Image (cartoon, rainbow, N blue to C red; front, side, top):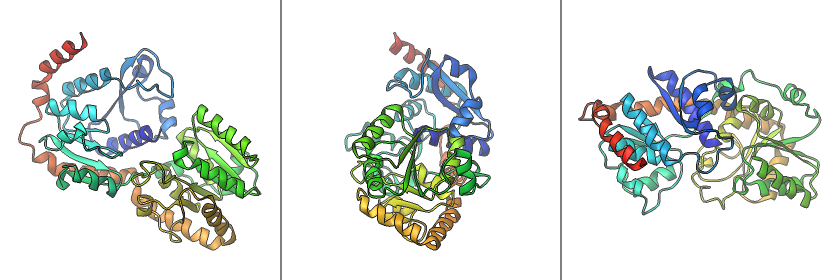
Length: 391
């Protein structure tokens, strides 16, 4: 879910800074005909219209998408479409798209949020003259890619972002609770995101067990994960956990505003724990509510203990309990760190992120020796190759 939200938000920001921008993605026949509609905008919390091209690789598909949703046919058709359009640049998070685009001579920027393996075939991208650059969300990830052969000149680290317009107008805690029918007198600790174990849900539930007088609200999760967490709550005899389930992005702000404290308990046992840059972190910062988060390397590049958040030891419920209690016992501290986080989140908007990426891309595009007509020259060759592989 975070992946698609990030793509949608990046697309919106890019569309506001570029004269000719299109988001090309997969879909079924119905979604291909609709393009961008109200449902799409509400789901991702978008406020601007831009061109969405859905390549119908399925007859009908329901959300959440099946594992084979982005199949090889989509990758080939997407690059075929790019050849027809002869873009100045393809920006993608998909290595298959990178590989095919480079073969067609289309300039590419690749964004990736996961580590690279020693034997990764993606390493061959780095020396291609049309590989304009690589973007990632943590300095640790960037260093790893550089160690695997990526030129520092083609490298950019920039955090994920937030759409501050989704949090306007500001909502008082009382107003948000009235809107959501939450009790005004409850001490609410709120988590937003998937309910996976590596997100720290076991730690959150154990923290709730240690704090029966507090209400823990969980917003997000697919049906299977919700059922599992409900079963875990039953086994732990928890009566102070409320599971809301998934809400569309346009409604998320009210839930965050209803909280006394926002919690981010990411587990250190997760293989991406040292490189993750959660979208929810920046959404939390936008609400002027105090944050308690796991003290993990990338999170520490944004949050500082007792300055703009309280940091707890990952996977240690007692540490989270102590931090939460401290915020209720010291409302001045809670207010100070919440306001500082809100001030600093203005440096992490999607617009500012896109501006940095475009500034990074511009001089590198100018250095290309070949003209941008190469994709059209390669189009017939690509069609022949595609038809041959499809037979």
